Length: 269
Image (cartoon, rainbow, N blue to C red):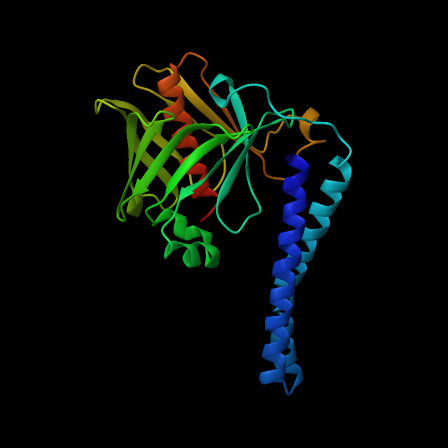
């Protein structure tokens, strides 16, 4: 799956590059620049082309390095792990891949249900995921549904969580208008008891989630990726989450549910 992720990035890069070049050529044919100044202004459009070419080259190099490497699938459920590496997938619709540090694929947070009118908005700009009523699920590498979540609300986001048997297990509340630079919210169990105050960066950086009893639920670190794993994860940006092994299965489902939701928000700004 890690190799496939880099391959999809390369293909998406080619698709967007082709679309961009067609648009630029069409613009030049319709409004042909007449002087050096106008041509200079048009040349600025070439910066996104350069950016896309860099993505294509980096993805190609990463794929070539890993295409013959036997990585395999994780044998553990996400609920048994004490860490995950989170990677945004190269796809038209938002999807968040989860790996172990060894590169073994665990599963993915992916859209479970989207109203037909939402598709054009999401394909046009994935950041609409932060405002639309959508359903996500975590699907394991064997295709098993582990838990799911449903988002609704505009000024205030409310996310409800369900286990694989569709039992309600808790909810998360976030005031979006206060969450420009930082994601702030509260996590509750199925009885309405607050379990955790959520606070994290919308951009990057390290942060920790600690409950009122000073028990660390999760630690997020970015930029200090263990050197021994950089032969697999070639990106400059690698989000890693370490989670407590002292949580019940229900609480761990809620924790990973919030992590998945927030990182989908964070990677689709």
